[in-house]
Amino acid sequence: MEPRYGGGSIADVVGSVCDGLAVPGAWDLLDLGPGDRSVILLIDGLGHRQLADHADLAPFLTCQQRSVLTSVTPSTTPVALTSLGTGLPPGQHGLVGASFRLPETGRLLWPLSWKDDPPVAQVQPESTWWQRADRAGVAVTIVSPRAYRTGGLTRAALGGGAYQGADGPGERVADTAAAAGRGERALVYSYWEHLDRAAHMYGVDSPQYRAELVAADRHAEQVAAALPPGSRLLVTSDHGLVDCPDVVDLEQLPPLWQDVQAVAGEPRFRHIYPAPGSAAAVAQRWRETLGDAASVVVRDEAIADGWFGEVAADVRDRIGDVIAVARDSARFALPNQDAAASSLIGQHGAMSAAEMEVPLIVA
Image 1 (cartoon, helix red, strand yellow):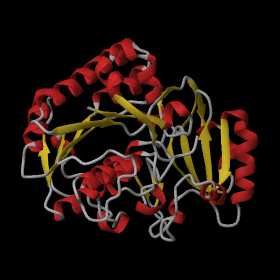
Image 2 (tube, helix red, strand yellow):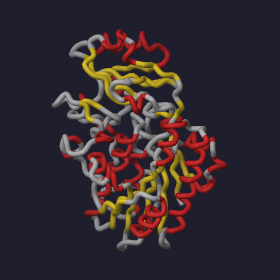
Image 3 (spheres, one colour):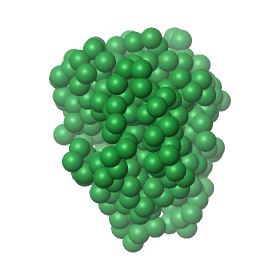
Image 4 (cartoon, helix red, strand yellow):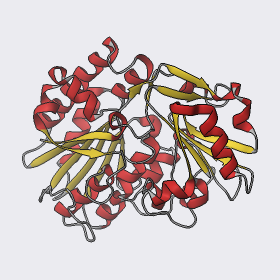
């Protein structure tokens, strides 16, 4: 399924909340209404399909669900968080994958491990809604693990306001509630990573995943109960996940590498950068070699179909000239390039409903 930018995706959440906070330029695309104290809790990996399949384990989240949004393309954390924070599709903010090539240097950028090189402003120069709200006098706080404070992705997606490092569950509940009570108007972002980790490592119907879903539900309920009067809590996610036991080792398929300079992305969504003039031939070889396991398209086709939203001129060449999107339960492994990601049973990044659909919960 394709992302619903402009009225039904996670890129529309913070702008809609900011309209309710009277931030100039904001537009309530999701019809959330006014609210002077809003907390956005992002539970990483909380897909709508997985929540529906395990509704008995998450009664608070299930009962409060308002609608279903889409993630972005690719449906992966660094891309989705930057769309959440900026309100822009990937083609505008420029983070187009779990890894992607910067054409000006030819280097691959891995946003999850990004620090200061290259400078954040060169890669993602757009303002975030957190910055706009801060300039409008809203008390903006980011409540997230201490280890993420100085990351390049944090500055690209969450820049603006005060960063409150919090690691333990109790710390996050208390710090989120305190932040929601600051000033006359408050906007708080809070992050929960444990569900995503369990899904990646053990699968979306594993005992570990089920236990973490119970914990996430309880955490959201605790946050809601701790907030000061007049607050509202919105819970959403960056993507869902699927179990992918069918491993396709790209490194063991020589035809795929003819005329190819680099492959980036992640196991469910691979950006392919061929030698100049060879995109059509490379795409055909990937189609023939991968068969029904993949949907292989050239960049112009993906852009025309709206995968990345409107694409800025300086972002276009970050997208692979050829893109291979995994189907069903396949994952495209690169053991010598991203061994950890390639080894995980739970995956995301592609365009299945299980990966693309996320809940919008309003308490």
